[in-house]
Image (tube, rainbow, N blue to C red; front, side):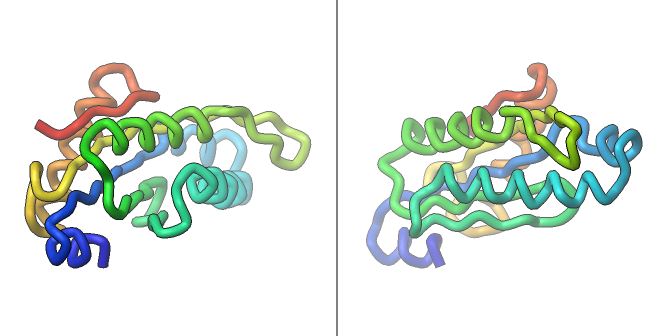
Length: 143
C-alpha cells in the first residue's frame, strides 16, 4: 500500500530490510523458547521506532522489514534504520538472563532503487548484506 500511495502521489517511500546478527547462536545456546521471546521483544522495539502509518513486519526467521510511508529521501530512511539498530541493540532481560543481540539493515527508496516491490526488496537485501560484510550492527543504502 505504501508503494501504491507513493506512486499515486509522486512521492518517495522506503524499505528497510533487517536481519538479526547471530540469532542462531541465541537459539543454540539459550533455546528456541528464549529465541521466540526475543523475536517478540525485537518486534516491539521496532514498532516503537517508526511512525504510526509505517509498517513493521516479520518476514520469517530473524528477518524483519520496515515499510516507511512518504519519506523525504535517503536521510529520513537512514535515520529510521539507525533508530532501529540502536533500539534493538539495547540488552534484553529474558527469564532472568541478559541477552544482547544486534541487527543489520539495508535500505532502498522508491523510486530511486526500484519501482516495484520485488526490485525494492532485492535492492534492500543487497544493501543488508553489504552492512553485514562491513561488520554488522550497521546499515547501508542501496546503490
